[in-house]
Image 1: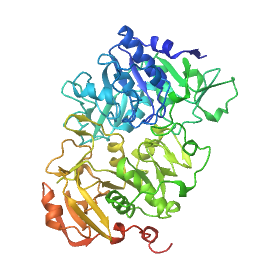
Image 2: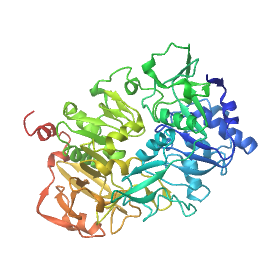
Image 3: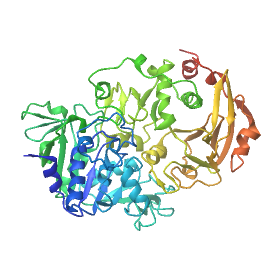
Image 4: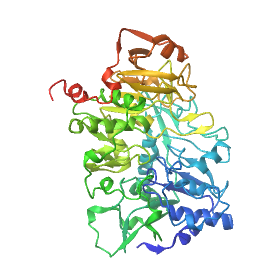
Length: 545
């Protein structure tokens, strides 16, 4: 039976050199109070040190917590350079180098303090695909040697490229290239897990854990199983305590037989549901929010891009949306009264509803089902998505995409590699250049000042999506406010141009390679560039709405 302890007592249970697993996305599932106690203990005693940290998705808030007024803020000294807005895994970096010395995860940009240490070479580790990270826990729990998959082939995770190494100080590859049944695979090895650091909403007296107010049912069960079956310990932070046997058994997401210690937080502000909101009941199923209450975005180039991406959706499709501009496609579908024509989902496990952009990415308004994070990737890896819309950081002449590393800025792939591996239609989207000044009005695009950052390069800095590994039945598009490309026969083909854009000056002169130009080069629908559009439903239904 689980023992109920304080956050400080939990921190004292963690030995030097421990391998630690955390689960969640953003701030969902993150045990903030326990993390702060670990940080404080290290600052006071120098222990625990040399921790090896494993995570799946991003766990932090990129400084999105400006409205945060929490229990820990009042304990910080006047000399602390960041008195608020640095939550999540950055807590473990706030004490300086030495607490965490190895770090493995799919997305590492949001943990600012740890990220800065990794950029300096004070932390080593690998970035791996998100689905691999969250499903590897089950392999560990079941005592299997690792995960065999094609996810990552041809990308920077492939040992023939960078092996997923985060920096020059990292020596080990993330995976081994193997041949099985005459085909290439990557093999990601299992490892023993010493400590699981998790969060739920409610614990009963036996340590059974409910995720009642969590928007995301994360990979906590798999991590707890991996730690327990490795001979490690499982620590779960919760907000509320309940009498034994009072929880609905179907609401218990981590059974008490796997839980060693429970920490009840001293303040609920240490348990935010997402980066931008403490608790939004429409994320966790307590209410359904009217679609009309969901934010309507003003007309600009980002809205044009999201509208054009939405045109690629087919009625009845299962659609995944990434972060950034791609997340706005959900709002376009809602704004154009097309929610009934498509099922949107997030790799976090949200099925249906309207996926949220930052700062609440991973959550969805009004989901119709919420499944475990790792189970979501079983659907994704098997080809269960009809379409995905993801970000475009850099693109090259082979159709490769980089969203995972820019100079020394470490980001990681998140679910990007997994999702693009098997989805039938992949649409990348982003502005054509960075830091440009644009105007959208009267059905046209005006380029007021050219951007200073080129995105269409001869070679991307890092391969997060490998154009050469596109499957024969996949369709791949690249959507910007100025034009639309398609990857065809391994070549980038310019298919559409925005009204108001000059082919030579505004597109070709701003690229480091020369694309093929379609013989039937089309002009993008000018309705995309007007305040009121209203054409999406007709497009999606073929005029049968």
